[in-house]
Length: 298
Image (cartoon, rainbow, N blue to C red; front, side, top):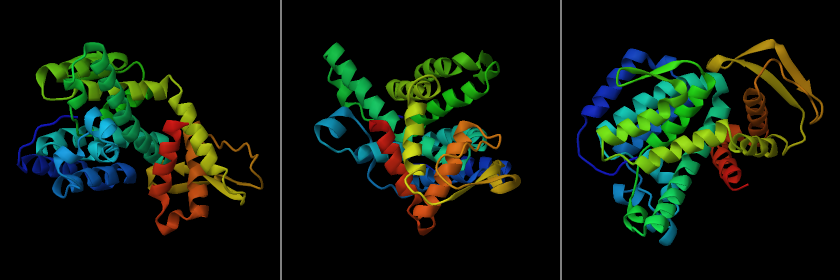
């Protein structure tokens, strides 16, 4: 999250070069779609930057809540987009393969909304504590808050490892906090509060109530229909299925696990629920965003 702008396409060229080296076929579908959305909105913004950024004054006092939807996917300049997307792709590949595409899409939708909402709450709290209105007027854009939340998830799923921050090895447990401080020191134009909001959202998921609330929201979605369901064990993000792990639930009380994690089981249930209720007719993303919003306000 940050708020300055300059016109250039060097960052886009660097991003294309990185993707060419990585290979688009190696990027899972939701990660690739989110990358494409951010790049598209940089080239063809849904609103001018000052009408896309989110702040307490604009969102809360002026009632422009749509900024919560716009701000994560707009970037101040091409290098801002480049650094955010390179970081996101690396985390997205790892997390989407672990969580499954449907659950990862759900996570992104919730994190995108909740990071902005928590950013507003933190800025409002600082305004009250310091009586400094500059906190309420600070307007932020960018996907970096969500990326910090994903970083917390990635480190949570890979405990005991190290992350290299500016060439120095840092335990995964503390990497997000070290990067938070170093980025603020080396790039003063970035939003410290926006990044902090992302870390807190990640912690709410890994150690707090957010994951449980998301499962409740997913449960409401997956059990909203009474039709029989066939669950499959996904083999990576390629969409292949293992027939040995295929089960049919004749009612909503099946205890199918098939070796899946809880996220994979819920993702399978969501996939079938969305398929039954019209995912194939193009309403899937709307349902994911709707249930993401429900999760936040449960």
